[in-house]
Picture 1 (tube, one colour):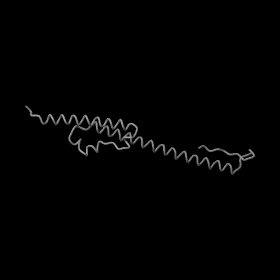
Picture 2 (cartoon, one colour; picture 1 turned 45 degrees about the horizontal axis):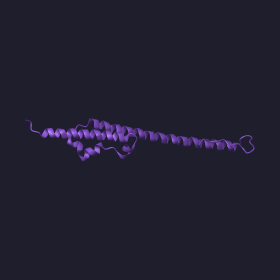
Picture 3 (tube, helix red, strand yellow; picture 1 turned 120 degrees about the vertical axis):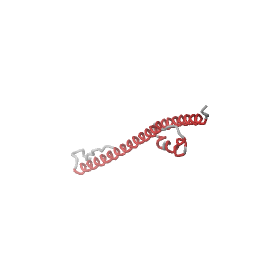
Picture 4 (tube, one colour; picture 1 turned 135 degrees about the horizontal axis):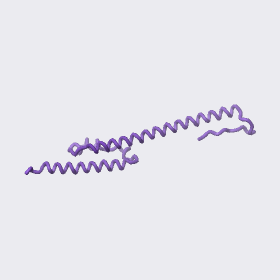
Length: 121
């Protein structure tokens, strides 16, 4: 809230006391505004980190080749988004994209396995 300069009751000149109160209120307003900016910057940094983490997860999934290791518990954990990332704006899309890539890898892996088990003749 911005500070307000209060005038003496007689609407005459501002007293030294009123000037000090005005300066004190201004310093409080500045301190509050600095805290609000620091909070906003911290929140923005958190948002940026989440975007980076989601992007990293998508990039990791792009590079994964179909293999049995991808479908183990460790593979599941390595490819999972955190609850924060999933509920984060864009996180649902990222989770769906990762799931789609994983389904496609699973399908390809299964096909490779079927081919491997077929006789060569």
